[in-house]
Length: 297
Image 1: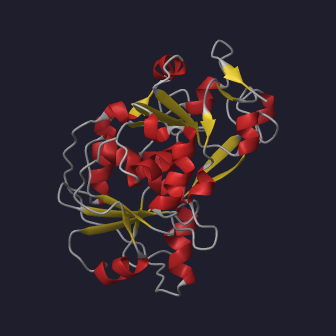
Image 2 (image 1 turned 60 degrees about the horizontal axis):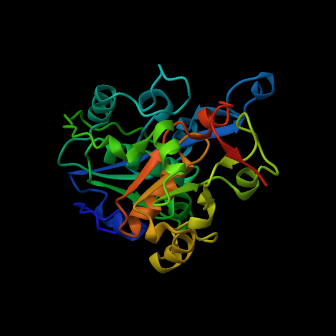
């Protein structure tokens, strides 16, 4: 296992953020997306969830000076067969630049819904070579719980130019998964809840169960239930090492559509792993293709 070099801390605390809100190079963003049951899922649609921009949550209240990143509208590939897929390089660079993110910017990401949405944007930034991004530990819920200032004023940063340097091997596709199933040196991690992993309950991504040979680390187990903060590195190691992450040459995380798995991948980087990729299409693709191998309990 080798260490990844970054220019800023991957996690920042609420105290640090409050003290640095006026820093001229700082850009803070709410990345929230709302997810609920897809009313058409029983009619043969490919996924059980409907997604909606979390902009309404942003307007209701956000960290002073924070902008809003629209994952659905700006950071998803509209031409893809599945929702929430990584956008093309130029689309991503144009969107980030319009948000005011440039090469020297320090970006702090949070979500007014689940932390995994901030982790998704962090992972996409990393895929395009931007390492000056941090996640607010505990997110907006922690910020509010600590009774820090909240704003309803819309913030837009001046546009910047972002230089991309793609590192797209940190995203995996179905062929990578098929090879990984046959490779004892690759650890495939499912970030979905246990019932979805075993196939005993929950919404169905076409077929019940999990990708063959994958192990389960539900993304919700990576956070302190009281504070929303990521667990300590010692506790994260206690989760990931028993399932073989420490011995793996390569690690691929997956979930329903590459969001919860981005959070698992981010947690692994907190432990220093850089041999991690996210299966972008995840079960949106795998569960709906009967030619791809699955298991269930």
